[in-house]
Image (cartoon, rainbow, N blue to C red):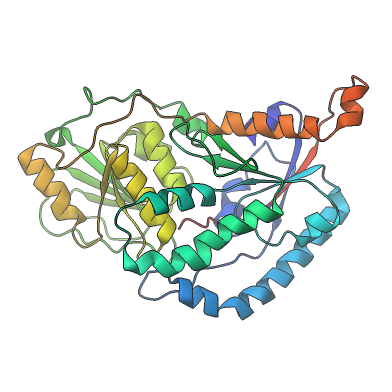
Length: 366
């Protein structure tokens, strides 16, 4: 959004939940409108494809309300293009023939999931009923899908365009080149940041006994004691992330992306039953940035590596990660608008600042 705003685009945001808090003070947008959000179903902090599938009646009612909210905004704005982030109430856009550009990871999830030699039984229903359906939905109902990944790989079809990882500009400013020679040894850990989802699916990690490093916990409430500090929910966690020597995160793609950008050794604790989070954790492991962890054993896993002063079973890093996805996404959107505005191009007229509506839900990767 910042890149587009700098080019003169007028941006209007339609979002929900944490998105409303995040965008309320952003200067790059002209308006912020609340919208209802979809949800995953499950139990005991996990998600289930079958439970989500059985919630379709409730989800359909939410979708009807979302379409009405989107229609009301479109009637006021008449945008030139809509950029959506895991949004499915697209009928008002398609009826008005407004181009739809999606930023979505479902194509990556499908490719990486099918590539994994071992797929937990617990994530199968979620993959086929939710993630694979998400991939098919975007393939058939969006005009262009920007698919972020840390390596420059091929996509599953012409509608998908590979871009680098997307991270906040403040995080990019703290990016560091990482290779196997300067990957810090476990005994160098002084501060480990646990950045956990603030949703009902957040991991429940218990900190017992004395730890040989400082622990800072972001996202969930708790009572600070000793060298364990709880920060609760933070809209701006940049400084906390910057002083981390290692990260423990849930498997949402935003958190994983910023771990790649920062080059921090990372332990990813996927939400139980969540196929995308299993895939994201596998990407971190397979590309040498860190490890798949479990909320019950991650502390012991950290302590074992600390005691032995080696990253047990860590894979080698590739030569470099692609982390300029925000700039690439902006360029792809502008290029798409130029391709779909032939009259302006033929007349040699500059493409005027577009009105961008961005309907989206609270982050799908919890």
